[in-house]
Length: 150
Image (tube, rainbow, N blue to C red; front, top):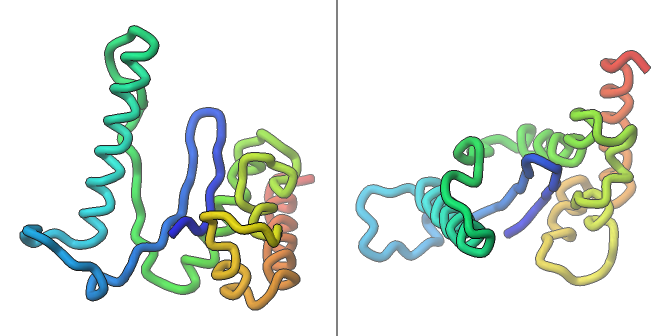
């Protein structure tokens, strides 16, 4: 399930939550973890996208500079921090003075009560409520500003 995202000019971040391995039905998969299976599916997706893009634009060669990175979120603290990290990324890269205004991020979308494939309710519940979600992001934004010397 899609939990958070941020699209930037030269890269993007997405946070997805997958089912527990015990809840996944494996068919003819020998010694593969759920993490490995998801990583493989993303590799296939990026490869297919690059091939279609190259065909559409009559070009050849690599489309992406580096292979995608994936990180296993293995603690509640890290999960909380990674949501903020994803949302704050445009400000960290100097693309905006306030990440909360970044149009291509899930930060504001999570606050909207409109159905989507983004798991907004789960994120809000994770932080306790909308006010706590906003407060966490505001408090951590202040730390960014202090680090940047504003």
